[in-house]
Image (tube, rainbow, N blue to C red; front, side):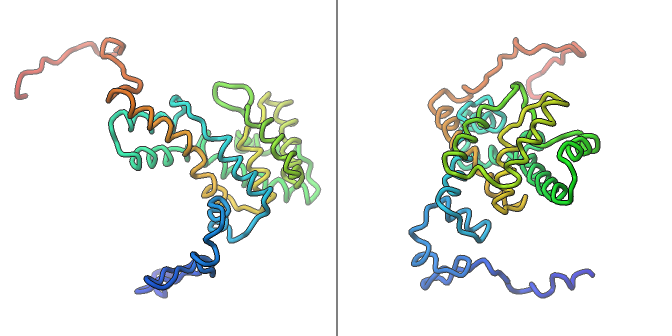
Length: 268
């Protein structure tokens, strides 16, 4: 089937999400935005837009915590560095933050790994329900894909966010759910066989899977999670001289290749 698949959308927008009727009202998932949803907390509103579901106050507090505990101000972190460099070159805040958020989808340690982690727990939960054991599933996963998403961490053995998040989860009475329990079983297997500890990606993905988020919904939810830390780096870069983020003088560069030099003539 070719163009027939999209022909019904020609010359029109078909949506079940909502619409704006200028001068009259705005419909948001079947509700009047200004009169029915205007008192919602922004996080609650954002999650409702993504999932179409309303969650309890403890769950929303946990989701909010996932954002807070991931907003690091350190300009050395890969996405923050881009924002700080953009600020040093006097890019606008929108340009800087957009670039930083885009690179937050890094495949090795960014949001793409979070998507893989949700997919992992969805498959693990189904496998366990069919009678498969966790250790066998994890070993097969490692043999085939060479990775268990959400385990290990660049430059550090352990993740300071995990024990803090566990305490938060327990304080909210949310230390339940099949995948949440499974993530600790997975950690035992991975730690025993490959000496890698669980990081926040695995813990968050397990909990978010128990809440019914799809991988795509989780990606959209976590998209702004680094934003608060990024704004700090951008603001500080503006306070410093232009070009004042990680400047490198030419004499600090070491050339181990061809040492031939070109003579530059004026106008050429």
